[in-house]
Length: 302
Image 1: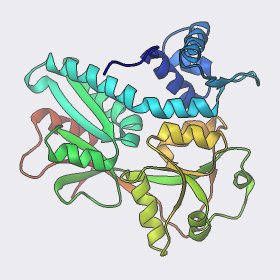
Image 2: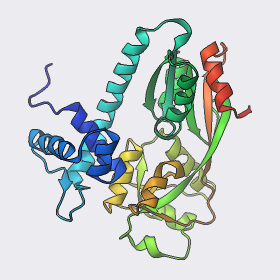
Image 3: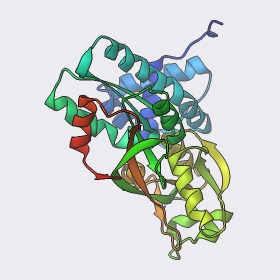
Image 4: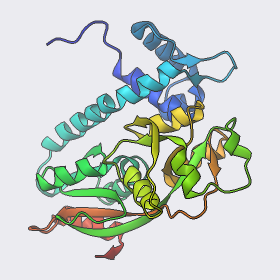
């Protein structure tokens, strides 16, 4: 079935996502190597195409509207699929040990894998890497179906059907918007209060969600979802807009905390540390190129 007209420009959707990540049109323009006026024109054209106001410019600093947050969330799969398409077609053009297929959970793919893969490419510019993203549950399914050479997952437990190695530790933190009542509190939030509070959360099946659920379950509790979103970027935008507290990787929110878009809320009596693992099938060894990447990453064998 043909797509309905008008179809939004995918580069403009990618730019809007960068505005959500960077916090301003100027910084997003720098990330895309275009001028700020050009970025503003693209975003206004996207608003006209969709018939929605995506950015609130009244304060002199562009912020995503509720519609903008929704569009960023809905466009995640489109942009990720386009990246997979571009990386995949590039990989088809290469052969043998220059081609590495990687699948990673969302947080790992956005905040760790690019640096790891860049190190590998610096050592050999001919390498072509195809990266796809999903939640940890999706990564396990892809690896079981041999859809990638290496996978990266996050969570408290190693997938029993795959071999794995710990490559890094991370922890989750509770974050709120600067105007939220929790942003100035001195008393830490405990497990009971966190469980009773409606939260902006990742979807079930994500490593981030699993860590939170496991931590609360230790106290006989479970989280109360207010909004469930499929990406870290969408959660950060929703929390910054005042939707409610969120629970996210420290890796993901450090730039937003530095820029004042989010505030970390102290917690007590709840352990939100998690392990990040590389996984591969039990019945085969990683390819030579995959082993090179593993050597660069390091980590303790399980």
